[in-house]
Image 1 (cartoon, rainbow, N blue to C red):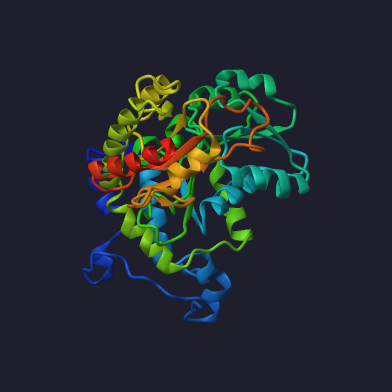
Image 2 (image 1 turned 90 degrees about the horizontal axis):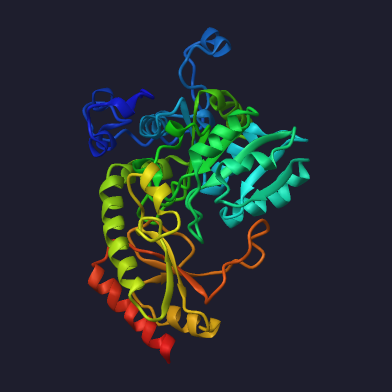
Length: 392
């Protein structure tokens, strides 16, 4: 699929419905076949030795994985896409593809906690230096550069505290030292923000979330711009990474309806977030799509939409016990760490030990919500039960 898809006259939902599939190549069937395979046979020794055959061994791809990679390549406007077994697996291969021993990595202080754990364990053990930066630093990130700064890991918004980042400003600064810029774009997906169009080198998604969309498969994706593609492809192959065909199929299935679902997630989340702003128990709602959010101007400038994930802070003086009572009273919302599926989810936001470059937010406890596809009135009724338990 062409990386110039952004100039296509067709709408996004149309492209999502058709990208990565060729019914004429599969006897007219709408969906590509799910290929379960390991061994690939060659017709003769000459073909085997020269490699003049599209597929050589299933670990390096098959028609099923190609279908999803091609579709995502069009969606992201990428030079190439590789699949991973989870979002964290995708982050790992992306970072390893552009870092070597002795390099310096800058990571947003609002990064996904497992990303931070990867940096503090495996990357440091491999001799990679890691520092964290204020997610609102923008062009000021230049002051943190060292002679060996090789990559910058961004995430917008942060998945717990929802600070926005000035991605174009960070990219412009990174270009002055030829550093790679990576972005965890799981929250917006390329439906609402295309990182590669803004100069990011590696766009990462936990496809488990909105691509799969049904809470029934694990998947990660990495889309590369031209200067990052060769090393991503090499590293992915060297690590022997592979995604099972049934999980790839579930990613393809979810991809077809991703824009429709995201539009509904956003509509419902805006309604619930605005409603929460009026609650006396709530001090602040952290959702960049809200007009009074600190990151709203950046979001409005660069993004075309928002997903269903946001957080809110209870008023100061609210105890942790009361916040837990709120969560335990919910029946429609599940208590679970994932998000992006059809169901609404809630978790307590726990930041202790998760920040080093910026102070922890002041005020009462925070709750992160994923607004699913249920009726908004039912979602609000469930939250009302939580607030009743909070008040005792």
